[in-house]
Amino acid sequence: MENIPNKSHGKATLVMMPMPLGSLSLNSMNHSDFMAQIGAIQCWVVENARTFRRFVSSLQLSINIDSLRIFELHRDYDRKSLTIFLQENIKKGNIGLASEAGVPGMADPGAEIAAWAHENEVRVISICGPSSIILALSSGGLNGQNFTFHGYAPVKEDELRSFLGKLGKDCEKTGYTQALIEAPYRSDRLLSALLSVLPHSLKICVACNLHEPDEFTQTRTVAEWGKNKPVLGKNPCIFLVGR
Image (cartoon, rainbow, N blue to C red; front, side, top):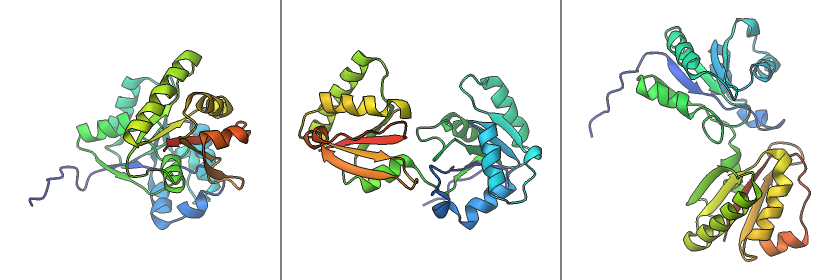
Protein backbone atom coordinates (compact mmCIF):
# COMPACT_ATOMS: atom_id res chain seq x y z
CA MET A 1 0.00 0.00 0.00
CA GLU A 2 1.38 3.39 -0.97
CA ASN A 3 1.88 6.00 1.69
CA ILE A 4 -0.55 8.90 1.47
CA PRO A 5 1.46 12.09 1.02
CA ASN A 6 1.10 14.49 3.91
CA LYS A 7 1.93 17.99 2.73
CA SER A 8 1.36 19.35 6.23
CA HIS A 9 4.18 17.29 7.79
CA GLY A 10 6.53 19.48 9.80
CA LYS A 11 4.18 22.47 9.72
CA ALA A 12 1.93 23.95 12.38
CA THR A 13 -0.95 21.81 13.60
CA LEU A 14 -4.57 22.27 14.66
CA VAL A 15 -4.89 20.52 18.03
CA MET A 16 -8.39 19.37 19.03
CA MET A 17 -8.12 19.76 22.79
CA PRO A 18 -10.68 18.20 25.18
CA MET A 19 -11.92 20.06 28.22
CA PRO A 20 -13.20 18.57 31.51
CA LEU A 21 -16.82 17.48 31.76
CA GLY A 22 -16.85 17.83 35.53
CA SER A 23 -14.65 18.17 38.59
CA LEU A 24 -13.39 14.59 38.31
CA SER A 25 -12.32 14.76 34.65
CA LEU A 26 -8.76 15.81 35.35
CA ASN A 27 -8.19 12.52 37.16
CA SER A 28 -8.19 10.84 33.75
CA MET A 29 -6.90 13.80 31.71
CA ASN A 30 -3.72 14.37 33.70
CA HIS A 31 -1.42 12.72 31.18
CA SER A 32 1.80 14.06 29.69
CA ASP A 33 0.42 14.64 26.18
CA PHE A 34 -2.47 16.80 27.40
CA MET A 35 -0.32 18.89 29.72
CA ALA A 36 2.49 19.30 27.18
CA GLN A 37 0.15 20.40 24.41
CA ILE A 38 -1.87 22.85 26.50
CA GLY A 39 1.31 24.30 27.96
CA ALA A 40 2.91 24.91 24.57
CA ILE A 41 0.03 26.39 22.56
CA GLN A 42 -0.17 30.17 22.48
CA CYS A 43 -3.12 30.55 20.11
CA TRP A 44 -6.62 29.26 20.82
CA VAL A 45 -10.14 29.15 19.45
CA VAL A 46 -12.54 28.65 22.36
CA GLU A 47 -16.24 29.09 23.21
CA ASN A 48 -15.69 31.32 26.23
CA ALA A 49 -12.38 33.09 26.73
CA ARG A 50 -13.00 33.86 30.40
CA THR A 51 -13.72 30.29 31.51
CA PHE A 52 -10.89 28.97 29.32
CA ARG A 53 -8.34 31.32 30.90
CA ARG A 54 -9.59 30.35 34.35
CA PHE A 55 -9.16 26.65 33.56
CA VAL A 56 -5.65 27.09 32.13
CA SER A 57 -4.67 29.16 35.17
CA SER A 58 -5.92 26.40 37.49
CA LEU A 59 -3.48 23.93 35.94
CA GLN A 60 -0.55 25.93 37.35
CA LEU A 61 1.68 25.28 34.33
CA SER A 62 3.41 28.68 34.51
CA ILE A 63 1.55 29.85 31.39
CA ASN A 64 1.36 33.60 30.82
CA ILE A 65 -2.41 33.83 30.50
CA ASP A 66 -2.34 37.43 29.24
CA SER A 67 -0.08 36.49 26.33
CA LEU A 68 -2.49 33.92 24.87
CA ARG A 69 -4.08 34.86 21.54
CA ILE A 70 -7.73 33.83 21.73
CA PHE A 71 -10.61 33.90 19.28
CA GLU A 72 -13.95 33.51 21.03
CA LEU A 73 -16.35 31.23 19.18
CA HIS A 74 -19.50 32.76 20.63
CA ARG A 75 -22.91 32.35 18.98
CA ASP A 76 -22.64 35.42 16.75
CA TYR A 77 -18.98 35.20 15.80
CA ASP A 78 -17.89 36.60 12.44
CA ARG A 79 -16.72 33.86 10.07
CA LYS A 80 -14.52 36.20 8.05
CA SER A 81 -12.73 37.35 11.22
CA LEU A 82 -12.26 33.72 12.26
CA THR A 83 -10.71 32.83 8.90
CA ILE A 84 -8.32 35.78 9.10
CA PHE A 85 -7.39 34.79 12.67
CA LEU A 86 -6.65 31.20 11.61
CA GLN A 87 -4.69 32.22 8.53
CA GLU A 88 -2.51 34.66 10.44
CA ASN A 89 -1.84 32.49 13.46
CA ILE A 90 -1.20 29.13 11.81
CA LYS A 91 1.96 30.76 10.40
CA LYS A 92 3.18 31.36 13.97
CA GLY A 93 2.64 27.88 15.44
CA ASN A 94 0.05 25.38 16.55
CA ILE A 95 -3.55 26.44 17.17
CA GLY A 96 -5.63 24.81 19.89
CA LEU A 97 -9.38 24.32 19.60
CA ALA A 98 -11.39 23.79 22.78
CA SER A 99 -15.09 23.77 23.61
CA GLU A 100 -16.52 24.42 27.06
CA ALA A 101 -16.60 20.71 27.96
CA GLY A 102 -15.76 17.44 26.29
CA VAL A 103 -14.27 16.90 22.85
CA PRO A 104 -14.52 19.74 20.31
CA GLY A 105 -16.44 18.91 17.15
CA MET A 106 -18.68 16.35 18.91
CA ALA A 107 -21.94 18.07 19.92
CA ASP A 108 -19.80 21.18 20.28
CA PRO A 109 -18.39 23.78 17.89
CA GLY A 110 -15.26 22.88 15.99
CA ALA A 111 -16.12 20.90 12.87
CA GLU A 112 -15.87 23.87 10.53
CA ILE A 113 -12.44 24.78 11.92
CA ALA A 114 -11.20 21.23 11.39
CA ALA A 115 -12.68 21.42 7.87
CA TRP A 116 -10.75 24.67 7.28
CA ALA A 117 -7.56 22.92 8.38
CA HIS A 118 -8.07 20.03 5.96
CA GLU A 119 -8.89 22.39 3.10
CA ASN A 120 -5.66 24.28 3.77
CA GLU A 121 -3.51 21.16 4.28
CA VAL A 122 -3.01 21.90 7.97
CA ARG A 123 -2.33 18.81 10.06
CA VAL A 124 -5.07 17.98 12.60
CA ILE A 125 -4.59 15.88 15.74
CA SER A 126 -6.96 15.04 18.61
CA ILE A 127 -5.84 14.69 22.22
CA CYS A 128 -7.47 12.02 24.37
CA GLY A 129 -10.09 13.29 26.78
CA PRO A 130 -13.67 12.77 27.99
CA SER A 131 -16.63 12.73 25.63
CA SER A 132 -20.05 12.54 27.26
CA ILE A 133 -21.46 10.76 24.20
CA ILE A 134 -18.83 8.02 24.27
CA LEU A 135 -19.01 7.65 28.06
CA ALA A 136 -22.79 7.19 27.93
CA LEU A 137 -22.61 4.66 25.09
CA SER A 138 -19.85 2.77 26.88
CA SER A 139 -21.69 2.44 30.18
CA GLY A 140 -25.33 2.41 29.11
CA GLY A 141 -25.60 -1.25 28.14
CA LEU A 142 -27.27 -0.48 24.80
CA ASN A 143 -26.04 -1.08 21.26
CA GLY A 144 -22.65 0.64 21.05
CA GLN A 145 -21.80 -0.83 17.65
CA ASN A 146 -24.58 0.92 15.77
CA PHE A 147 -25.92 4.26 16.93
CA THR A 148 -27.19 7.61 15.70
CA PHE A 149 -26.39 10.87 17.46
CA HIS A 150 -29.06 13.51 16.90
CA GLY A 151 -27.58 16.42 18.83
CA TYR A 152 -30.10 18.69 20.55
CA ALA A 153 -33.79 17.81 20.61
CA PRO A 154 -36.30 20.25 19.05
CA VAL A 155 -37.64 22.89 21.44
CA LYS A 156 -41.20 23.38 20.17
CA GLU A 157 -43.61 20.87 21.71
CA ASP A 158 -45.19 19.60 18.48
CA GLU A 159 -41.81 19.27 16.75
CA LEU A 160 -40.37 17.50 19.78
CA ARG A 161 -43.14 14.90 19.94
CA SER A 162 -42.95 14.26 16.18
CA PHE A 163 -39.17 13.91 16.39
CA LEU A 164 -39.33 11.49 19.32
CA GLY A 165 -42.04 9.44 17.63
CA LYS A 166 -39.85 8.94 14.57
CA LEU A 167 -36.82 8.27 16.77
CA GLY A 168 -38.70 5.50 18.56
CA LYS A 169 -39.82 3.88 15.31
CA ASP A 170 -36.27 4.02 13.92
CA CYS A 171 -34.95 2.40 17.09
CA GLU A 172 -37.52 -0.44 16.93
CA LYS A 173 -36.90 -1.02 13.21
CA THR A 174 -33.09 -0.85 13.06
CA GLY A 175 -31.91 -1.66 16.58
CA TYR A 176 -29.64 1.37 16.43
CA THR A 177 -29.19 3.22 19.71
CA GLN A 178 -30.52 6.77 19.41
CA ALA A 179 -28.50 9.38 21.32
CA LEU A 180 -29.53 12.97 22.01
CA ILE A 181 -28.83 15.84 24.35
CA GLU A 182 -30.69 18.85 25.69
CA ALA A 183 -29.90 22.08 27.48
CA PRO A 184 -29.62 21.19 31.19
CA TYR A 185 -32.61 23.28 32.25
CA ARG A 186 -34.80 21.27 29.84
CA SER A 187 -33.60 17.79 30.87
CA ASP A 188 -36.71 17.01 32.95
CA ARG A 189 -38.97 18.17 30.13
CA LEU A 190 -37.18 15.93 27.62
CA LEU A 191 -37.35 12.89 29.89
CA SER A 192 -41.09 13.43 30.40
CA ALA A 193 -41.57 13.70 26.64
CA LEU A 194 -39.59 10.51 26.04
CA LEU A 195 -41.72 8.65 28.58
CA SER A 196 -44.98 9.90 27.09
CA VAL A 197 -44.12 9.24 23.42
CA LEU A 198 -41.97 6.09 23.28
CA PRO A 199 -43.29 2.51 23.43
CA HIS A 200 -43.08 1.09 26.96
CA SER A 201 -40.81 -1.77 25.86
CA LEU A 202 -37.97 0.46 24.66
CA LYS A 203 -35.12 1.31 27.02
CA ILE A 204 -33.87 4.74 28.01
CA CYS A 205 -30.41 5.36 29.40
CA VAL A 206 -29.93 8.58 31.36
CA ALA A 207 -26.28 9.56 31.87
CA CYS A 208 -26.35 12.53 34.23
CA ASN A 209 -23.66 14.86 35.58
CA LEU A 210 -20.81 12.77 34.20
CA HIS A 211 -17.45 13.14 35.98
CA GLU A 212 -19.03 14.80 39.01
CA PRO A 213 -19.19 13.12 42.45
CA ASP A 214 -22.95 12.59 42.11
CA GLU A 215 -22.89 11.28 38.52
CA PHE A 216 -25.12 8.38 37.58
CA THR A 217 -25.83 6.31 34.49
CA GLN A 218 -29.00 4.20 34.61
CA THR A 219 -30.83 2.24 31.94
CA ARG A 220 -34.46 1.23 32.41
CA THR A 221 -37.44 0.48 30.17
CA VAL A 222 -39.86 3.30 29.50
CA ALA A 223 -42.38 1.51 31.75
CA GLU A 224 -39.85 1.22 34.60
CA TRP A 225 -38.82 4.88 34.36
CA GLY A 226 -42.49 5.84 34.44
CA LYS A 227 -42.87 4.25 37.87
CA ASN A 228 -39.87 6.04 39.35
CA LYS A 229 -38.92 9.12 37.33
CA PRO A 230 -35.89 11.01 38.70
CA VAL A 231 -35.67 14.78 39.03
CA LEU A 232 -32.72 15.83 36.88
CA GLY A 233 -32.83 19.53 37.66
CA LYS A 234 -30.27 21.60 35.77
CA ASN A 235 -27.69 18.85 35.50
CA PRO A 236 -26.27 18.08 32.03
CA CYS A 237 -27.51 14.76 30.66
CA ILE A 238 -27.09 12.45 27.70
CA PHE A 239 -30.14 10.40 26.73
CA LEU A 240 -29.92 7.08 24.89
CA VAL A 241 -32.86 5.13 23.52
CA GLY A 242 -32.45 1.45 22.64
CA ARG A 243 -34.21 -1.87 22.58
